Length: 267
Length: 260
Image (cartoon, rainbow over all chains, first blue to last red; front, side, top):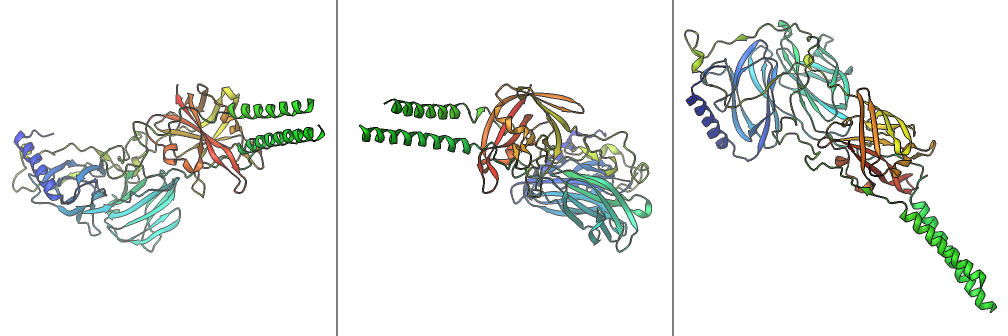
């Protein structure tokens, strides 16, 4: 780590504190994860003019960050830049309260550096199922996505995603060049856990041998099973003995009454 | 006269039998607290900054994992800095305003967690020793229960016994084809009875804290299948009144056990 004058830390902190409330016209918090999908390139990442990520390594991601909802500016610079005045890429993003967003540093099809945002689907999943979101953020043309041999989406362009809900478990995901059997990336036996949204980012460039998959996993989306059906014969029906008892008692009472009347009649 | 006394005695005897039958079968005993007092089992996506809610998939990077399809990346290059002229003096650059944990995101480096699937359930008080199989969710969105009424089913999407939350094991009370199931005696478990669950990494021991008959309409699945909070073992079967029209019991028998 660099040694930094205290004043600079204070200034940067003040910058964030001042900017963040001003930018959030709406109240609430958004959850933001930053994903680095540009091969071989270390970056600094800035949020609203303050340094957020120092020496952000390629093929890594942050833990989910809480950011006030509202309008924000994200910028990427070369490492050790003094500020974000000369970014290699930047993005103005409006974060809705309670939204879950991934910001991805990516290469465009022609190899330019770009920041893109994806809103992550964190809606509930039925018990036993998983969600997968395959995102094209690589320096390559349109792609077909296959899941377990079946086309999930065809002609996915850079910056787009394909989302599917599948039974939880291991699934084979394949990325082909659009309209061909030219396999760009094969991810056999990808574990998609129940109640998660597994975000698969196809990043890098096949031409330079840097094409790979990065993953972010959002957990805790599961609904519980609706019920536990564990019997269908009625062999231990609680209602049956009660019925029997009521019946027997009624029978005894009737016998008693009948006997009394009989006794009265014969007397 | 003698017959009247006989009838009266008979009637009283029936009443006594009825009373004994009702009193001798307490429906609920002990404490059945499915939800956790510390943490709720509700979903946590999005709103909260809890890093455990949606953490990056880096919990257990397997050092033995083979590298991805691409070769180990060469040391990352550094972009030219924004400033002109000779190499910058690093001491003037600002420092990040907050410490943000960063993880490796390569899919090839992720190792799914090892799950120790329970394979045996022992209830010494009932002299029961059952095979346990892993079960999921059926097409109707209900928990699967093993076909064999002699087996118990562990809900494989939930916690394993001993992990935070409710490890749920269910078994048939009966079946139209196979007759009574092993779990039909679950209603006989008493507070303090021991329960043992074995998996390939050992045995966990539990003690029954309570048993309850829960109306199925009132069952809260998110509490029953809680994923966080205190570790509990929850045994479930069916019971109560039987609705012949839909061939289903109206209630679940739920036994909650605490770790010893």
